Amino acid sequence: MTTISTATIVAAAFAAAITVVNPAHSADTLPQQQAVKNVVLVHGAFADGSGWRGVYDLLTARGYRVSIVQNPLTSLADDVAATKRVLDRQTGQTILVGHSWGGTIITEAGVHPDVAGLVYVSALAPDAGETTADQYKGFTGSPEFVIETSADGFGFLDLQKFKAGFAADTSDADAAFLRDSQVPVNMSSFATKLENAAWRSKPSWAVIATEDKAFDGRMLHKMADRMGAKITEVKASHALFMTQPKVIADVIDNAARSAGEAKR
Image (cartoon, rainbow, N blue to C red; front, side, top):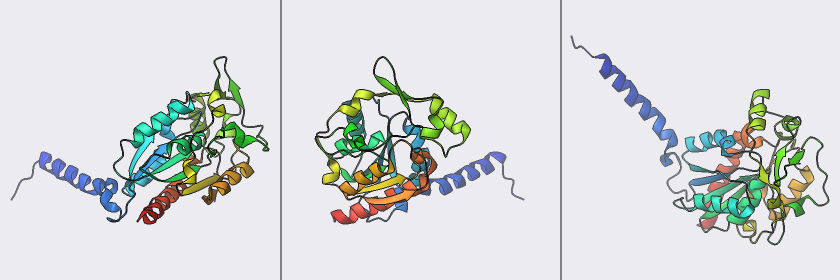
């Protein structure tokens, strides 16, 4: 009778677990001929990159290399520099994704030569020579989305209205965590004119949350239409980057496949 030690059993089980887990995070799960296998995610104001975790998990499971930018939110130039720093670390063509204020950032940074396409997630999309603030002209704001500006010019969302205005479709616990971990944005950033508009030369996709309180829905559609973006609507709050990871991952996946085909 052969005796197998506990250590051997544990080692075998560990090896089996590695065999099961690793392929889900390997580029081998993507078609070998697919040109675009990198995704860079850019968060917006009042949040940080951790909100992309659901999208990250879904895309890495499909074989994409996913990187998340942590914007300082101190100026447009600083946020663009942070994004370019991550783009420079990619090997090959990349889909650049921005949520909310992140849309302004990817519009400027997306002229990077490795960017194959842009995905706007309820995001701003100014043109060259325009400011982010210009996009609001002619549209009404929501009473639930209230920005309070501190003496040094940085903005926070109102604590009492945070869930209703930013994350209405999250749990109370998740909304409270988002509220209490806010990353303030330098409000002067919204008045900075862009030098570039990457969407004028790169294919674009837009995911629009129909229950978004941060932006007038007509404003989001106007920007997406001007870009000629392929539009996907989803019933969600402004926090759709957290609450609708599958919808967003599917759009990014489609963008990667389509942008790669267009470059052949």
